[in-house]
Length: 435
Image (cartoon, rainbow, N blue to C red):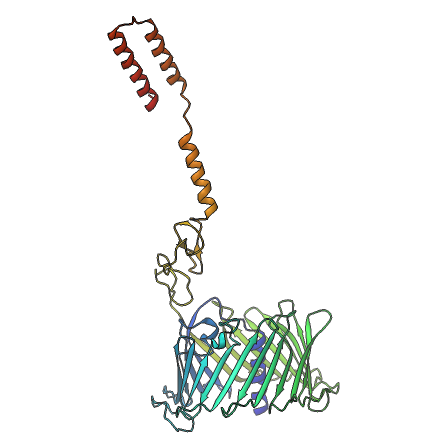
């Protein structure tokens, strides 16, 4: 039973890493997670997490506003932690007896300080760039310092740990990103004692058809593959999802486990074959929500012979109310209706016009904004229109001709001069108003 339990957990982890896409279609404000590791339909524990939508998306679920564990299903959280933010700094308060107080000196209560924008690094919103300081006794003394730095230009993530905060580095981990395969590493090296030699080296080598890779885990860092060193072959489909995972535990050419995966609608299945003898020993399923296929409904493991359910881990989500459309910028919204956050066409790089918000609240609508070139063209057109003398219409020209003819036959007297002026004025009125 314990073997199946741990095996199913491994499969669930693999599914979660390689099969589940990030939350996208719906914003989740809270999540209940029920664990039934006996497969009897009765959860053994439940955890609840509440997410703060004002927190940057890359940290929202890593550092939930609240997380509590109910281990005996009495609707009381036996342990809990909360996270508060101040600028780029997040503090996690662990209250393991859930008495509402982080007790100094209590063996399990502790404080963790995350600085998510340290040292002015290249990308301050990069989830791989942060500093974590741990006050394990909640006594105001930092006991451990962990630093993760992402060198974007050189595709490196370096993590260092100072276990007792004495200024010396006790552990170094270097992760080399693969620029040709975004989201994957090319090599991971770990120096546990910071003694100048690598204690483990994991290398990832892609195949010639680029539809899979081999993971070489040199667990003693001696540069060779032998006893205790695992070789794992991963095969991917066209969408980059895992199709098969083959494990050779001692890199001796003998396969200890082969797991194949398939997706059918909202269900993804994994078939585990221990010993690679062609017999399925465990079936694991992931079920996704119909209203949002990026969210997992539940996972379960089954005995392939009896079909009996061995365990089940399920989610219950609290979806956020729709924020876009209420004329108030909230969460990740750039703008919302009439609320433009103080932005104008000028602040967006234009010289004039009326800025608006797209209906998605994700970007501004600049269709009515004008650039410098557009304004110059419009002003030139207006100036040319003002300077242009309008051509008289046919009726205007005819009226003018008739008036001049009449004047030419009148005697040169004072009355005739007055009459000529009157007639000429009428002609001007006709031309002006286009009668």
